[in-house]
Image (cartoon, rainbow, N blue to C red; front, side):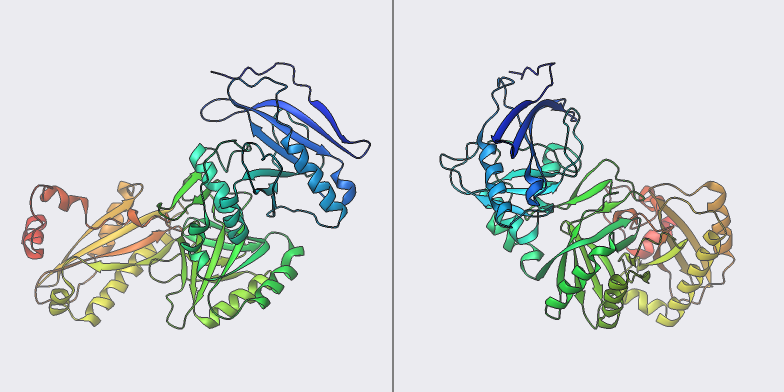
Length: 480
């Protein structure tokens, strides 16, 4: 059964407190990927006189509900917020309310909650100046909101409804998506957590940017950092307003995204940044749950703290397969960054055939050739390049190139192979082979784009054949 939406869109006016607090109830539909979603939006007018931003509460209509059959339960919430504001207690974006209404609230008995975010424009709904949007949450979900903020819950709602970043409506009868057990099963339940204002994290290509988007919040950030004990810390962050994708996660599910643009160059944001200082840290950032983990040595962590509090630019080079950490919004991307490598045979066998010194020296020379090659070219889209090298006794070498998500242009590939083939390889006792990975123009941020072996090798050995021994593989793809 569908809901009939009246073409007459004038709101219903309700006077809750004469000449003090009014509510207008709008009947409208929200566009979604599955079609229009009929809703009521309750908009208050009058809370501002008590220092409380006015509230927009949007409720999805159930099939068969008439235009004027909107529930009156939210009116009691608005009266409660008015009384609290008169007592000097106001709710802000990122905050929450917990309350119980005699007879239940929108079908829920006992305590329930509301989570608050800045309201976004809704077609067919007139807002007062900078209102808050309220979202109906269960008592179980409220435990997560109290502990970790509202990012996790709201992005889960967006992911489940395929609505970026999350649907503007609340829904009666919706099952809880988070509970108390989920709080403990997250990194955020095991490390000291501090709520911040104005701190934002965004990933673009293979860089994680941290910045304070409003200098008025720098003092608040300094106070929060001073309050937490030494050691690992999680800072809850504001979602980047320019993000086209958001990380989504809860215990028991893989990391996902809700997005309108999932390309590597698009802005991806999350709900927290965890700093894990360690004297042995391989420095850099990684995606973790629905946020980011940054591993730093103590001295670097102090530099990052100072840069954030002083609103200065700072770049922390990445090590291993991590992302570079950038304080500020500097977008300059280096053409080439080494991203590690791996032998294409057992480590012990590899070390028997070539000395570590000879291997390290020659691998660096390969890196220099790649840097020179792409440093001469205009900046392109982020790519993951793997250079595979095989060397036979007699100082004879061959190379294979694999680039993802796009193949290298034929002319560029030919020129790079020509430059690599001009290198004189080191002596080896028997054939060796390895792959070296490079992020081009910031990389893609997706480790799966680094392929384990050249595509040509897969053709030489069909999937139904057992994996060959290293020497047999080389004989097949590179006959002596």
